[in-house]
Amino acid sequence: MANRYIFQIALLLCITTALAESYTLDQSQQKSSILVCQDLLNQLNGSATDCLKQRMNSKIPEEIKNPQLLQKEDLVLVTYELFQQIFGIFSRNFSRTSWNETIVEKLLMELYQQKNQLKTTVEEIIKETNDIWGNKHILNLKKYYFSLMRYLKANKYSSCAWIIIKTEIIRNFVYLDKLISYFSN
Ligand SMILES: *[C@@H]1O[C@H](CO)[C@@H](O)[C@H](O)[C@H]1NC(C)=O
Ligand SMILES: *[C@@H]1O[C@H](CO)[C@@H](O)[C@H](O)[C@H]1NC(C)=O
Ligand SMILES: *[C@@H]1O[C@H](CO)[C@@H](O)[C@H](O)[C@H]1NC(C)=O
Image (cartoon, rainbow, N blue to C red; front, top):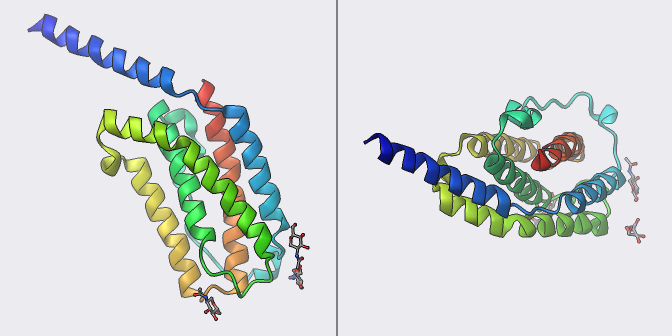
């Protein structure tokens, strides 16, 4: 009995180690991509100080601000989800802003590429852990981004609503940068 238990633990450790080693994520490439995204977002004009009357109460899940609390698998899944959801947001209608479409397209392209680069690793993790739908960090993120989209919709995609969301997403990238720093720890 005891032996079998130890064997299972050993097996689990092997799988975990194998997974961790297969995460050959290009950290520096991702970090430079984050800089590109931040730069593009900053080129979308409009300052949140012009929109002080607008409020948005949604808050990014706490664990995203504390990557040290996340397991390596979760770091990858969460990073993928962030790229995916931010892509989803900026695919929405921003015609009421004065934003330059070319800049938004560049941003979408950058997000898509990053998302795509993580895809294989994410699929491996899902196959190994078999609990993507039960992953509470991902669920928390989905709820958070759903509330951002609901906010945009409720405000009829107004310029101010978009500016508030843009400011929120710029902050998201600061957290994302911190998350990616943890890949190598
Ligand atoms: C944003 O930039 C566009 C042109 O790039 C300009 O027409 C518009 O007035 C600017 N809006 C603000 C709020 O600065
Ligand atoms: C985007 O919104 C504008 C103005 O609110 C509307 O005229 C346009 O049809 C919308 N575009 C799409 C693709 O929904
Ligand atoms: C939009 O951005 C592109 C790329 O930065 C630039 O070449 C173009 O002149 C801009 N268009 C407007 C209307 O500002």
